[in-house]
Image 1: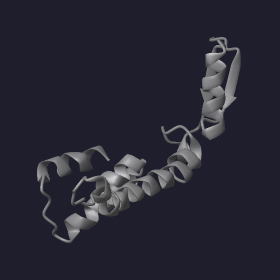
Image 2 (image 1 turned 90 degrees about the vertical axis):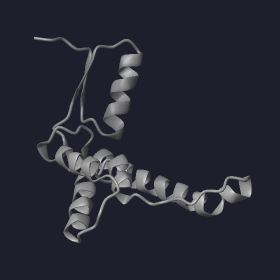
Image 3 (image 1 turned 120 degrees about the horizontal axis):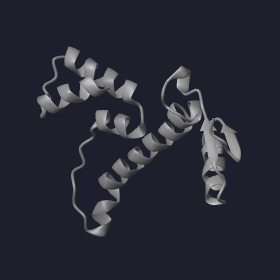
Length: 124
């Protein structure tokens, strides 16, 4: 049986920071987490569903707003295009991305890269 100097219970914001710091201090660390709803994703609700994904969505929306208003003041002229599916994937919300792709498909939406979208749906 493996021996550890410290075992961290929970891979959320506190747990993963504790595990990283203990490792930096030279300790042999194990981090135990049941995952979200018993799944494979470590970190609990805050990391996978609540706080962090929400912050990622907020960050994306702030960048989108800046691209529409602030970039031109810097001499950067762009016309941003919102890709909600990619934003949801980037935020870690694969379920939301899949639901959005399926909703668009039901509406009969045509995707610019249909093969890539179909492949992406298989991975979500």
